[in-house]
Structures are given as C-alpha cells and as structure tokens.
Image (cartoon, rainbow, N blue to C red):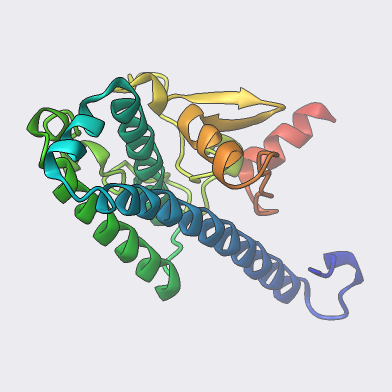
Length: 216
C-alpha cells in the first residue's frame, strides 16, 4: 500500500517522491501484464502456423476469410505493443525488464512474418514499420504527461485537435470518463481482463489540478 501523504512522518517532498515511485511501479506492473499477454497472442499464432506441415495448406488457411481476419486481429495486438513503446517513451519509463519483453515480442512477430511470406498478398497488406512506430510521436511538454489525456492501456497521449489520425483505431474513445484506443480496449477485454484498467495520475499534474479547481 502507498502511504497517504497526510499520515507520513517525513518531509512532504519525500512523501511526494515515494508516491510518484509507487505510481511508477503500478505503471510498470500494468505494462508487464499487457506485454506478457501480447506475446502470448503472437506466439499462439506462430504455434498454429508452425503445426501446419504443408506450405500449400498453410497458404490456404491464411488466404481464407477466417485466416485473414485472424491475422488482422494479431496485427492489431502487435500494434498495441508499438503504442505501448511510445507510451513508455512519453512517460520516461525505461526498466530493462520491459525492454526484454519488447525484444521477445519483436522476435516472435518477425518469426510470424516468415510464415506470412508464404502468402505475399497478405504480407504486402501489413503496414511498414514506420507506420507502426509510435516512439517518434511528439512528447508532451510536461515531463509527466497527464494520464487523463492518454489511453488507459498503452499510455500513449491522444492526438491534438489539429492532428488527423491515419486510421480510426488511432483515435481515443471515452469510456466512463477515461480514454482508450478501441483496439487497445478490445485487446484488454479479450486477452487480459473483463474490466478496463484505470490508472491514477501523479498528484502534481497541472491539468488534473485545474480540473479539480474548476469543479470546486
């Protein structure tokens, strides 16, 4: 449990630092949970295709409407991991454990693409790495971006009003006062938990403070 600042018998600045450290730990635990399930989804796709011994049969499966839909779903799950990578960069989260998990996901995804090479028409439909890269997104001026402006799953901040998302899935949707990418929410509800996560923002967030003052 994170001690409340009002009950800490230490300087307020130390309590605030401890609170932020606790929040960062909760973010990391959340990201690990997501990445672990993303890896499972992509690995399962690899295992399914690996068990098909005949290339002709594998191609037939991939070219079927069901197979195409399945690969599209796996792609959306992989896209969530790329958004999470951007969210980590935005929030300055860089633990080595998460980097290793990202590496494992990339290796599994690359292996899956080797199977997809049996069907060039499907492989060509995959977006280029530059489109999936979210780490190049313009970071928030604040060193600690407000979570109320970010997706509650990947932690990536939403686009500005003047920015037009390349795909509808890139826009944020509101659910019970919190924002989520539709594909991030679908991944979470289908692969992680039946309830969408709600992460707390840091107490010194100027946007949250302004909102509270407006309510008062």
